[in-house]
Image (cartoon, rainbow, N blue to C red; front, side, top):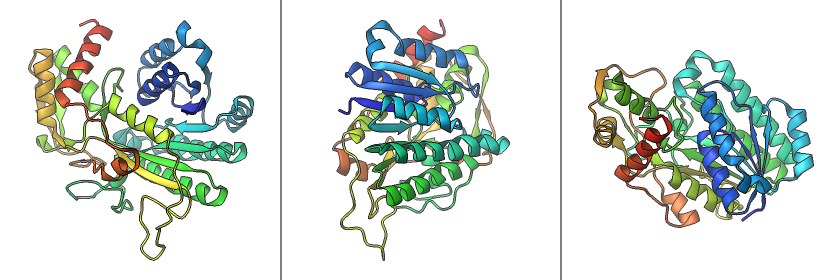
Length: 340
């Protein structure tokens, strides 16, 4: 395992779990986060407190900074000389991107551009960056594959994530930066994001508030447990992308290239109906949900399902935590953290 890794979005959901796992494995982590108030800052601070525990201190250093501050980013790269960079920092949220597109342009495009420039200047050996299943947009295939077209996004958030993939490929081509794009599907688990459905649903059931079930319940997602995501990222870290020697420019594969750039889905290969997910939450919590059915919201997609065949071919068998086990762990954490 690389011994000097820089992780942006270190106070975020996936960033926190990844940093914790890597630190425990003896990896030195340089963490960056601007700790914005898109969701509960106290939750982010609690995550950072755990990463700052005495037993971790020798392998952990943190900087509160924004990706838009290029000068400070360059200084951090120069001072700490990471070999691998994992960019998880982003303005998240599909619906919020419609209300406030500028925040997504600033963080997800301009901020990512600064990360790419720092990687170029520092001759980074491997860049991994977060993309999203949202890039599949209006795709109606039964299972989303990296070989599918992703040129028809249906939200500003999705468009910025697709832009990340294009910029990363360009820098890989121009500057020979090995780059791995990771299309995350709906991730859930302990320390999750309060703006995502699993946390919203759990909070509503515990507090006896109505759950808004969009598209009148006809929605399904590849709910993916956080530990499975972290395991996949760890394996990808250890296998930087290589040039696809079989790449045919006349029939280009969207997920690979003549330069060292690859894109992978990271998600559960089963699509779970929202009604089933809510039912399992009800069963674990011991309370019934109050449901309010509404029409689908702009920017939403009806179904996501991850085709993992390309990821499995690259890193080996992908872990898959059974949904009932994942929800059990998630709710146990939720009860403890929020004193239920």
